Every structure is written in C-alpha cells, then in structure tokens.
Length: 96
Image (tube, rainbow, N blue to C red; front, side, top):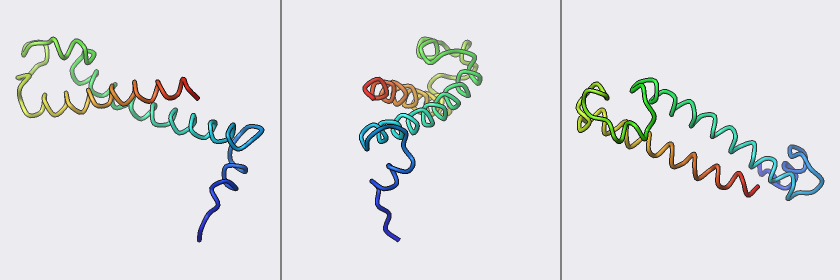
C-alpha cells in the first residue's frame, strides 16, 4: 500500500495550506522528541545529582565513582549527546 504523503498531511495537519500543516506536524514531532530527551536527561541528573555542566567539572567524590570509569564515560557521552540533540532541535523549532 503506497500512501500519498500530501494527502495525509492535508488530513492530519492543522492550518490553511500544506506548508502550514507540515510545519504543525514537524513541531509536534519535535515536541515529542524533546519530551523523550528531557526524560533521559532527568535520569542522568537524578543518577548523579547534578547537571551535565557540573558533571563535567566534578571529581570522583562528587560523581560517586571514578569519572574515567566505563560507566561514567558511557553516561557522559550519552548525556552530552542528548543535550546537543536537544539544542539542535530547539534551534529548528524556533524556525518553524
């Protein structure tokens, strides 16, 4: 079954024309992704009891484990990636 994307946008989107409807759908998709990202960021903030910025400056005592351990480094890279993706999406959201 081949779906006509323009037809779907006409039925699903909110607005006067296809572009306005498409922008609405994109905004909704970005909001949904941001909710997911924020939840994951909160998990790291709860786990370490601090923001990413503080984590980057923290020592072993503050983090609760060796900052160079596999777990801390893995978490840092995922956390930093989430924050970067969030900022990227927020930039594009402003343009919609």
